[in-house]
Amino acid sequence: MKRYRRIFVIVIDSLGIGAMPDAADYGDAGTDTLGHIDERMEAFKIPNLVRLGMANLHPLTHAAAAERPLGRYARLYEASAGKDTMTGHWEMMGLYITKPFKTFTDTGFPPELIEELEKRTGHRIVGNKAASGTAILDELGEHEIATGDMIVYTSADSVLQICGNEETFGLQELYRCCEIARELTMKDEWRVGRVIARPYVGRKKGEFRRTVNRHDYALKPYGRTVLNALKDGGCDVISVGKIRDIFDGEGVTEAYKSRSSVHGMEQTIEIADRDFRGLCFVNLVDFDALWGHRRNPVGYGQELERFDEKLGELLPKLKEDDLLVITADHGNDPTHTGTDHTRETVPFLAYSPSMAGGGPLPDQDTFAVIGATVADNFGVAMPEGCIGKSILGMLE
Image 1: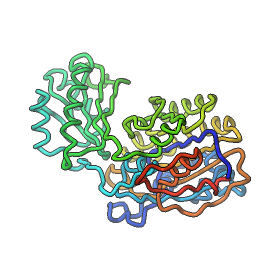
Image 2: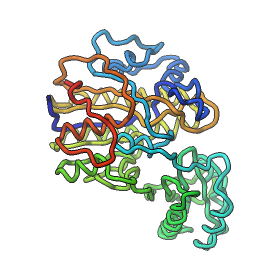
Image 3: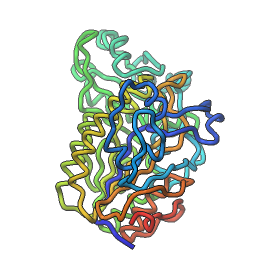
């Protein structure tokens, strides 16, 4: 069985390819992120994804299936309960989540939590609703600067976010308040996946700009994952984008934050020029944050086109003993009602220059085949309690 020296796993955040069998239980019957984007685009140019087999896996109106696809492809079903970022990524690396993380999209945070957060931080709280990060600043930024009140908001994800102006609120004060919020939201009834510090600069509406000093306070995975096994086994585990935050640094040896999905791909291309042995794990969040949640199918499609251009730059850099996997962590159908993620299957596209040829693989009943395959490739044991079976032998 062939072994690869370097494996690149790229997560196109939220690129679902059709409703899960239980999607109706989540209010997501009939969802299809990729298919509905394809329908809304006047033209949809993703030639490199098509070459790898995307149109073979999911029929597209704008592209014919490849006669000789370069990659092996399959549809992955999510075993865990939920449809959020952490559940999807944790499952990829072997964890089975039976209880979805708390979200407060429709109601805001409960009064008891807000009162305790006000008491502990010394700041009156404003906002307390689901909102876009830029919109909430335009609405309440001037108020926060004038009063010292603290903007708290959420999204469709399991997050509690706090805004603080770096000049008036202070970066360290923002971090202090977020640490308190993280402590409070460890309670089961308030437990969110992440507390996020959202610092910004500017003094008036229209001029506010979020800074690079964002900091995520994530829950640690409840058990050891494949990332821990790789690190303990002497492999490099390089994270790009928000992977480090999703796993709270567990199992990561080197981390790079990204300014955008395009920047994340540029970082990945630079990493492909380096010599390392192990995993480069990439999350590209703009698809989800900028287009899916904002229900903009054309913007999402154009982001996929920009990704495809960068994919065209990455593919020639792959060596004979490299493996590329492209997947997603959940859906976010931009034509669906509301602003929440959608419960969908996700693509699995695998390619190596050394493959004998492309073609279909059997559908897989868990995202965890990714982590199990990576662990098998590098000869490390799956941590106790992890799910997933390797399909390494199918990727030759």
